[in-house]
Image: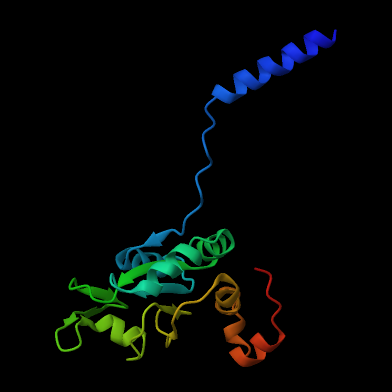
Length: 176
């Protein structure tokens, strides 16, 4: 009897060691184009998060790897925001709220990056439009998941409509 159990165990180990297990695909942020967001906002408005980056920015890459790949951040953004990834130095025209923004040769960035960050160019820059017509909340610099949580929940759950950020953040209990 004991030999049968050992044999069965060895057989199972052998079978499972050669079985191909397909890894589950990690959820990613559903990055949209500006055109897609403009269209979606007409029928199903919700806050817009724009990651303004440059290709040469070290901290932009770190934020992509650490923050925008964190499963809790990804899930929350996908559920509560439209997300856009925008290269600040794009020479392609950007349309936002029926207005065209073009590359600004003097500043070496697209005018939308200047508009969205209120002229405070720093990268990475997380910009949130609570609604398409509203003034932005531009948050320059790298943020860890635990640092971005309070900002995402403030806008994602609509607290910005009833209280200022300092009040909200003073009572906020981070979970990430």
